[in-house]
Length: 265
Image (tube, rainbow, N blue to C red; front, side, top):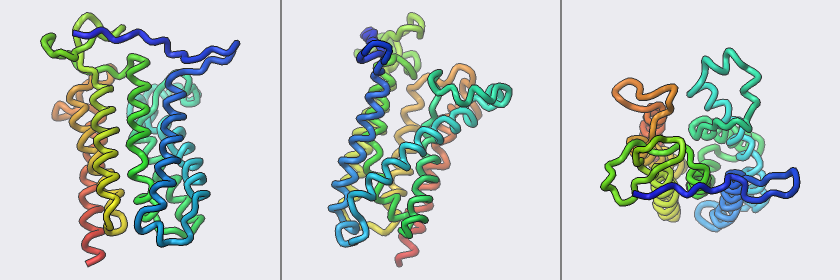
């Protein structure tokens, strides 16, 4: 088995200023989004639409960052520890203590993109089709940060598994490095599949639908290897909170894809 390398979470110390690896992964995620977003402008249908310019990517990125941070934090408080934060409402603002939810961040981004679409008079699904293929690399960057921090480790694994790993604070049993699984599935694999899918003409909204479905499926599978939150454990049907939150994503992706297909028929 392997032993998780105990990496200092502080990448760079400049006097009183500490630059954390996790913060750098967020910067990498936003930088990748901007670079990929500008590339997307050269794909159909956007390259034939004169109203789409590079400054739109900059505005989308700014709004998306707000959506990720606010939605991710609020989602974590509501989905994972509602009773605690209801009793301690000021703790909602203690973001330095950790606690972000992907599903909450996704809802925050959707709200931000609704505002962008409304304010710029752009079709909402067209905006989401532009954004969707640019997201998985950011998710991959976030999982790298999780691995560096030695957090969100996996469930107990068979000791004979060559890549089973001992994590500090997780006991003496070898575990699945679920952060790496999520990096590979929700990050790299989803990016490749979605980027290739989006390169060909699709009905408006189907690229966004493919993201919902693809992420939902990959995250659902990864949750079987990821240790459930200690204060929640496994819920109904032996599923984790992450899996239950993926169910509406998967169903929503299928329904949206079919709706877009029939609307164009």
